[in-house]
Every structure is written in C-alpha cells, then in structure tokens.
Amino acid sequence: MPTPADGRVLAGAERFVLALGTVEPRKNLPRLVAAWDRVADTDHDLHLVIAGAPGWGSAALDAAVVTARHGDRIHVLGWVDAPGRSALLRAAEVLAYPSLYEGFGIPPLEAMSVGTPVLAGRVGALVETCGDAAVFVDPGDTDDIAAGLVRLTTDDAERARVTAAGHVRVGEFSWDRTTDGIVDLYRRAIANA
Image 1 (tube, rainbow, N blue to C red):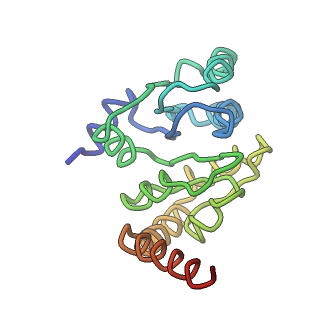
Image 2 (image 1 turned 45 degrees about the vertical axis):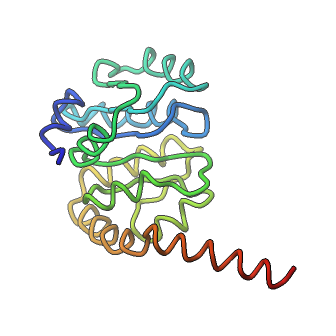
C-alpha cells in the first residue's frame, strides 16, 4: 500500500496542497494557483502539487505557474498512476478541489477515505457529494479560496472537524449502493413507461 512518505517523495515536498484531476478549465487551476500563491507569501514551507493528465486547460495553468511569485514551489506532475494518486492523497495537507462545475466529485471522497481534509467549490454536485465534510469556497473568488486554504492549513480544530466528518461521509457511498440505486431507477422508469 502506498504510504504518505511515498507521496512526499513523488510530490517533492513535505507539506503540500494537492489538486487532482485532468487539467481543464472547469477545474479552476489558474485561480487555485493565484490563491495558493497568496497563502505561500506567509506559509514558506507549503507547496502546491497538481497531478492530472494535461488537457485543454494546460496553457492557462502553465501561464499561471510562470507568473506565480512562488512558482518554484509549484509542482505540476502530469498524470500519475493509481498507487501514486493514493500516495499523494495520503500525504497531502489538503485536497483543493475548487472546481467551477463537477458532475459528482470522486477525488474529494478519495481524500476523505484517507483522512485528508477537502476544500471544494460550492457548486454543482460537490455540495451534495461532500455534505458537511469539506470547507466550501466560492470558486470564482481568489480571496475566498485563499482563506479556505489558510483555514485548513492552520486551524487544527477545523482540520479535525472536516476529517472526522469526511470519514463519516465517505461511508455513505459505495459501489453496491450506487448499483442498487441505478437498478431501482430503471425499474421505476420501466414501471412508469
């Protein structure tokens, strides 16, 4: 099983905020870079790690990294395999998921399952998926994202609350429940046809 130590080696940092997912505009990564850069002004040990396949938002992310004041502490890893993903999630101080839109949001649940606090955009299905187990931010507001990062990297009580709620929340989801729900949906659709 991948360990937090493996994640820190892969990240190239001891303390880091992790963003996970294909690089595309809805992931809001340039704004995350700007928000993290503000936090990095005073938190000199904190790095930002972005792991995900390059996508059609890569040019905007690259531009944000180049203009960041603390760009030397931003690590864009590209695609990582399942063990690497698990190791990064276990080692991350926070999973930052300030998406502009999400249909569900599996990475936050993955983070919750290993005890990593989640920062999420207050949009789409993320509010329902994460419940009370995340610090929600306005994904269009760089200051709000930065404040959420500060909250989860400095407030031990908030980290503990979100982590405990995450363990409970992730237990509410399973593939068996998902399958049962889909089968039930089809049965109701057929009955009403």
